[in-house]
Image (cartoon, rainbow, N blue to C red; front, top):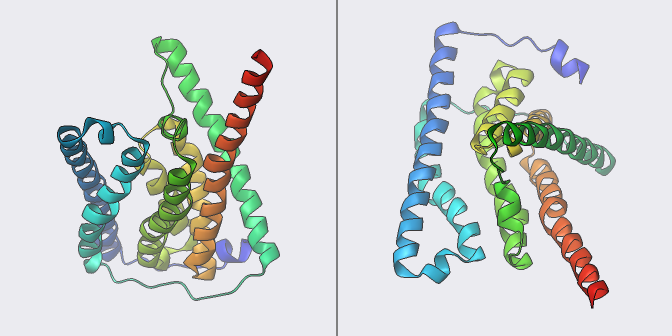
Length: 251
């Protein structure tokens, strides 16, 4: 880690760097805006066609990835053509090292979640309004199969391509720290709520660093998938199991 951050001497062409970072930032702004607009349109159409489908767990999971990857991603890729990608050099790591990254990732998630929950709890107490965590609302009571497909397969693949590969391939030439930090910040901001910002930003930084140093997006996809598996599917199974035990005890 010290070698990556200390020996690296990124060379800045001020004018070129400013133009590229501006294009990248504007690209993600467009990506976010198009995703939001597409999501609202899809929700309006679904509500008109079938209120039952609109309220279904399947639609709630489907609307975001369709908005992001079907409508917004092609525009982001087209916009990024003005910034030449320079993918990191490929390097293999052992399973033990990958597991170490996974453990650190869980630690980052835990600390980030504590920070986010603490801030939102404080805001709720000050404002007098109980803010809900949108991710928990999406997972609770839904089909585990639907959650597994979208949270453990689709989201890790799509998000690692959008927030790691596309971004770091275009900013890695400016240094590992800058590239990984941008990856984390953009990933956190795209979650658009304080509950998820801190742990998403921390995890994004770690995964950005991993992709920068290995050049293999499959490593980050795998870590992202395992973390989502435990954070959504396994946690939901445990919660439902405890609820079943409580209900049995009442009877």
